[in-house]
Image 1 (cartoon, rainbow, N blue to C red):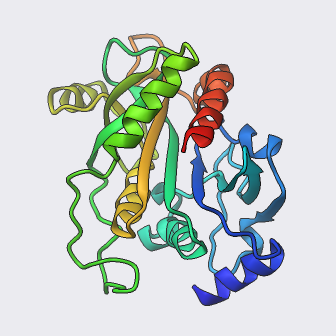
Image 2 (image 1 turned 90 degrees about the vertical axis):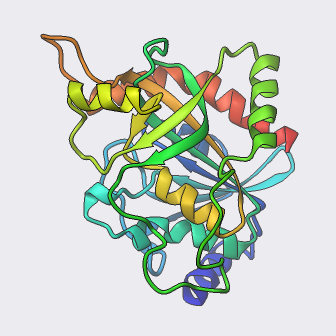
Length: 266
């Protein structure tokens, strides 16, 4: 950790971020528009490289509306073959750099039948169905306690703030439970039906490990999903990653506006 943090501080002239943002599939444009320093993951000691289309794989630092921000322009996923420790390591780095608030974004499939592509959904809670937990292993007492409480991972005050910001921007925002599977295959219709019965509103392959570790580290967490597709298709149609990128692109204007408004309000 010291090696990683010392490297980042040297490259960014000792930039001290207060807000961290993880940008999901197709949502990385924010980091292109606001960028004071950018470091590819491949250069950062102990970071792993993102291999997913639509993820540039850079740590971007910027001053936005007077707030110091660090953004992950693309994340790493469990399905890429990385360990849980590897994909959540950047969250621990953010905490060590001084981040207090972490905004998690992702592209997700709609399970709730009232959701449509390009909708934004505030995550009010999650269900971890990835088959493992990023806190398994020896505990680091300097970051968090062995058995962290998960009663309020996504902070209610940040959820209410998001609703207010969305209302001010005339964005019709949804709210729901995010269900995380390991991927990389999309879910079957039977699996989607199960998720719906068990209380999931949207499904994806990320975010939950980062949320668990962020909560463990004492960060204030907000999660927002960009709904990019119906989670399972009707007969004769197919799901694709290209569809995900396309729908995220349609939502990017209101998504960026919401994030900027949130930053200004924090």
